[in-house]
Length: 172
Image (cartoon, rainbow, N blue to C red; front, side, top):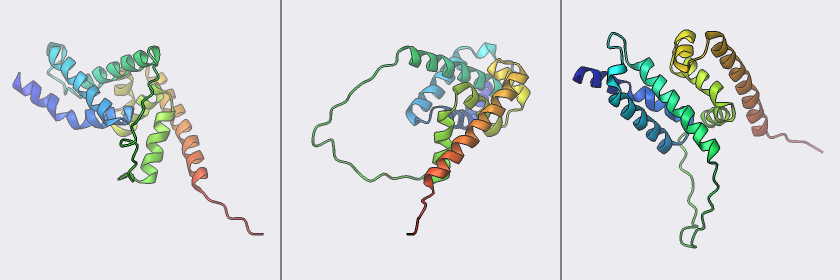
């Protein structure tokens, strides 16, 4: 039992990386990882011990992400916060990401969630097409299509971002 738990905990950095890429909100990403681990530990008997827990954990996380996305769409709520004068003070941003990294993350958030998940599993997490297709519960051809279309969409968005950054100087 302890060996199983240790194997699951060894996957924690990969789970956090994937969830942060999916959600882009560190708190929501940590919540997703926690929910995934809770479900995994409750259903420890479902894990085939002859294989690594990575695929099993990513499947759990993906299903939780899809459920959360559907729930959010159904309950789309707008909350308006009012700030007191003392709270309305701004501070300079402390940004540690490069512009390119931010643009890629922004572009990833612009594409459909099913394409984003496919690209992240194959491109970032290193799953094969067959593994990612199994993990997402879709045929391999569908996964390859999602990756291809997602990459095409990303290229277009990144080209658009880079065009906006370019400043043209016109002489008179």
